[in-house]
Amino acid sequence: MYNHAKLIHLIGLILWIGPSTGGYLLFLLGRYQKNDAVVLWLFDKFVNLVHLEAAGLAILIASGFAMRASVPELRYARWLKRKLAIVFAVFVPFELAHLYIYDFVIKKAISTGIGIAEAMYLYDKFSIVSALVLLITIPFVFWLAIFRPGAIVGD
Image 1 (cartoon, rainbow, N blue to C red):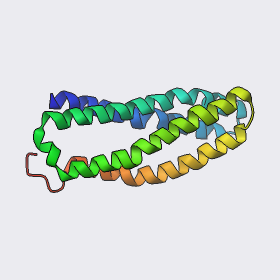
Image 2: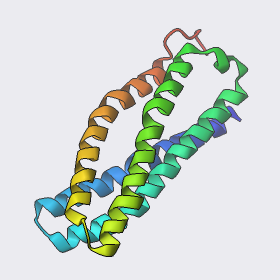
Image 3: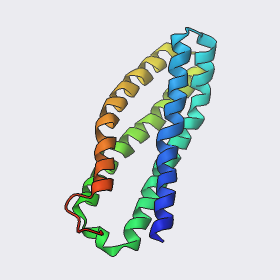
Image 4: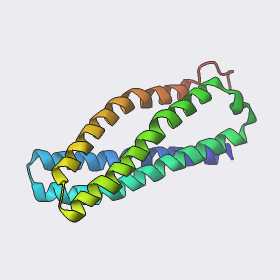
C-alpha cells in the first residue's frame, strides 16, 4: 500500500505545483506583451488550473496520510511531524486564500466587469507573497521528505 500511496503522492505533487505555475507564467507573458484581451481571457480560464492545484494538494494530503497509516512507525517520526506542520500551517491556508481570491474576487470582477484592475492587483500581491513563502517552505519540505533527519536508517 505504501508504494501505491507514494505514487499517488507524486502525482498530487505534480498537480499541485505544475498546472497553475505554468498558467501563471502564461498570464505574466500576456501582461508583458500588453495584450489586455489575452490577459483577461487567461485570468478567466486560470480558475480551472487553480482548482486543479487545490485538488493536487488534497491528493498530496490524502496520500500522505495513507502512507503514514501503512507504516505505523511514521506516527512518531519527527521529520514527518515537521513536514505536516508546514503543510497545515502554510500550504493549506495559502491554498484556501488562493481559492477565495480567485473564486470570490477575480471571478466576480470578471463576470461583472467591475473592479477588474483591483482584483488583478490583489492577485499580484498575493502571488508575490505566495512565491516568496513557497520558495522557502517547499524546498525545506522536500529536504525533510528526502533526508528524513533523525530517522533510523531504512525508515
